[in-house]
Image (cartoon, rainbow, N blue to C red; front, side, top):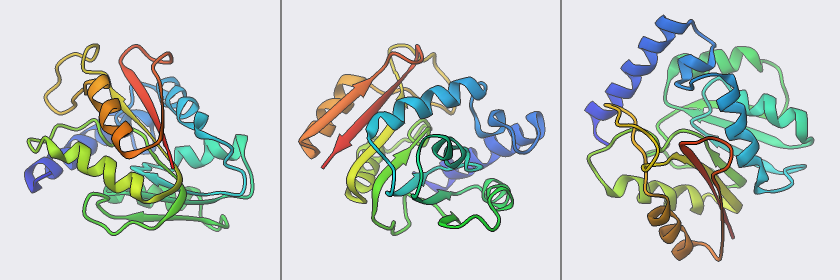
Length: 201
C-alpha cells in the first residue's frame, strides 16, 4: 500500500470523525454498532480466549477489548492502529487497565509481536493497487499467530462498488488460506456482504 493510499485512509476516517463525532463506531467506518458486534461474534468463534494473548490489528478505539471482557477473562490484549486519534481515545478508555496496551503504528510495515490469537476486523477492506498486498498481509498476520488468526473481509459478490472500500473473492481467499493453514473455517451468515475466516496452526 503506497503513501497516497494510506493518506486517503487517514483522510477518510478524519472526515468521518468530523461527521459522526469522535469515539463512535461510525467514525471507525462501520455502518452501526450492530454490524461491528456481529463481526466480533463471528471472529470469536476462533476459540476459547481465556488466558490467551490477543493481538488486535486495526483496533480502533479498542471496542474488541470491551467485547472480549464480556466473554473471556485472564487474557492479555494488545491493540494496533495507524490512526493517532483512535489510539489516543483507546488509551483514555483503558487508562490503568492491566494487561492492556495500545500502539499507534502501521501494521503493514511494523514488526509485529507474536500472540496466541491475532484478530483483524476491517483492515483488509481498503483499496490497494498492489494486488499482492492482501495475501502478503494474510501471511504476515498468520505468521504472528501461535494458535489461530481470525479476520473478516467484504464479499466481492455482494458489496457494491466503493471508491475506497473493496470486496474480495471469498473462494480465492479461502484457497489461498488453505495453502498456509491445515485448518480453515469460514462464516458468512451474520451480514449479507461480509465473511469471516479462521486460520489455525
